[in-house]
Image (cartoon, rainbow, N blue to C red; front, side):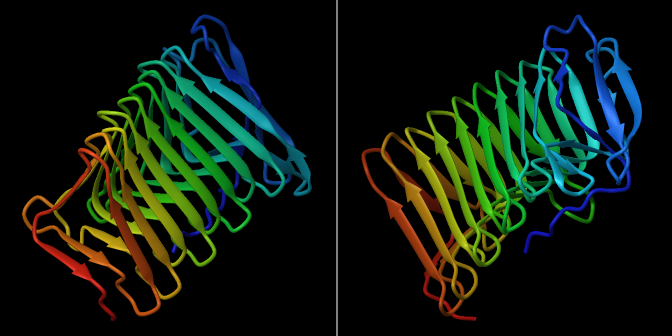
Length: 308
């Protein structure tokens, strides 16, 4: 189950542009937990002097004084780099936060996590070779959260693994989560979960040749609705842990895998991969492989219908 991410004591609210031309200056206003401005950081050139908030959080779309919603939109461009302990887009109910990050060298990093649609609405657009990275990446976190993520133009998300924990990507934690990966973009993570908690709605879609998801384990429909789709030559590759892919894990869940025409493919496991459809009694797992060139390769076992 995805945990609702809560902010630490101090952070930065942003309704700014992070120097898209890499030549000007911008300001970031930091707030305390009551919503009072605490200090202002001015960046002369975020390319050579990146914004690093360390243990503080970076929030776009917050409610100050706990009830005044402030929406925000941030553009990160031209090789600028922004990092914080937790990055929130749409942190509070009723807020709308969006970030658009573009161009090679531009980076958005959550040292602990990134939450797109925490309890509000969050939109993250990543394009033209830009990169996003974090140990935990949640899209549609709380029941009221709505998160939308678009990877385009050779952009990438790379999970940060630790010795004790693999990186985790969640589409639909307790809320609504949508992740689209197109135009030669990639998502690399230890665990990909789609539709985690009861009532969640998570969907991950890959489209176009060379758009790929690399994951050691795939759980589609843990306790909610999860859909994983590959079309137009896209590829989903899960590696060595088992079971590599689960469609419908717990009672009441529904997991759907759709592999459509155009040489789209899913490869389960390198040597010990196993695919399980409907792991628990009362769960539903559905796999559809159809159209010219569509394929699902399972290196070991395909299990249909197992109750634990």
